[in-house]
Structure formats: C-alpha cells, structure tokens
Length: 213
Image 1 (cartoon, rainbow, N blue to C red):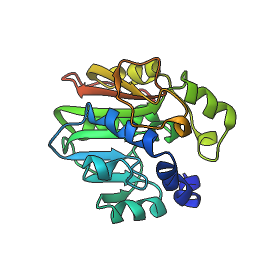
Image 2: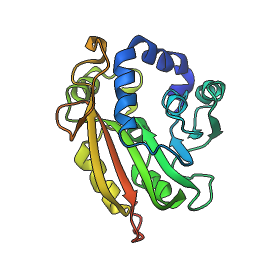
Image 3: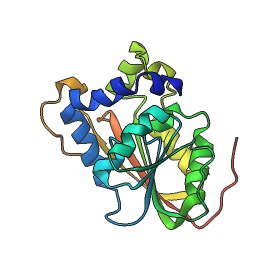
C-alpha cells in the first residue's frame, strides 16, 4: 500500500480532473446508502467518498492519505480491512469503495465487515468491473495504481458476499464511457453489465458463515 503514500496527491487530484465521473459514482452509491446510522469506510483514502456521503468513520493503511481525510472531517484510523479495530456489531453500514481490488484478502475484509455490522446492517461495495470497458482498459494500461490491483467481476464479489453470510444483493451501475469523456453527471441504472463502476449492496444475514482463507 506504499503506492498510496507515495502518490496520494495524484490519487486525490484524479477526482477533480474527472469531476463528472466522480459525481456519477457518488450518485450511484447514494442509491443504496442508508440515510442515517453509523457508517465506516474501509480503504477511506483521502476521504473523497466518506466526506460527501456523510460516512463518519474510516480506516486506511496510508498515513499520508488519511491526513487529507481528517481535514475533510472524517474520523480516521490507520489500519487494514482484514483486522478492524472495532467491536462486534458497532456499525449500521460498512462501505468498501474501490478498495477491494487492493486488499490482500478480500474475503477476510468482508468477514470483518460482517462482524462489525449490527443485525441487518448493510455492506456497500464499489468496484470497477473487471469485464467492463474501464476494467479492461485499466488492466491493459497498468497505471501507477491499478498495476497493483486484482480486479473482480460482479459475479466474483457477489459470490464472496454470499460466502460471508450476506443476503438481498442489489446492483447499480454508472460510468458508461471513459471518465475523461463524461461531460455531465450520469443517472445510475439498476443492474450491471454496461457501466464500468458497479455498486453492490447486501444485508447481513442471520446465519453466521465459515471464513474461507
């Protein structure tokens, strides 16, 4: 994760450079984000999502990135998603936006997300779909950030959510072109398969899963 400490300013600047793509992602997340309750973002980075979405708490391994998140009003701790320093059933919802492709053990991250969620709490995952226009482009381009990423399909993430005891999975998609070509905020659409950015949400089920390593 040193890549984000080294290039945290470049990462943060992407959202200004691609304003309408960024706002389109925000709109898609809002479709499933609870209007109230205590939330956590795993992989909060510079707080680009947590701050405008009102997610109060964040965790990230990059001290330099979270220094910006703190300035944006997010209560951030240094740490990793595989080992959350929060007690059981502490949050109403947990978001993992973009970050899932950068973690070492995504299944364990989702297992930890489930642990800290209250009964019927919600998990919200935002990914660049591996099979999408942008997913194929990023894998080929090997950018500073995405050369370190392990891209997932929507089916991959849905499977991991089910393995970890999540139910009632829903999908919204946006980014129907390359980010630099998007000239206005896009309206998110239900489902997946056309948009490069997909928001996958699910509810913590009653049955406790067995963690697969």
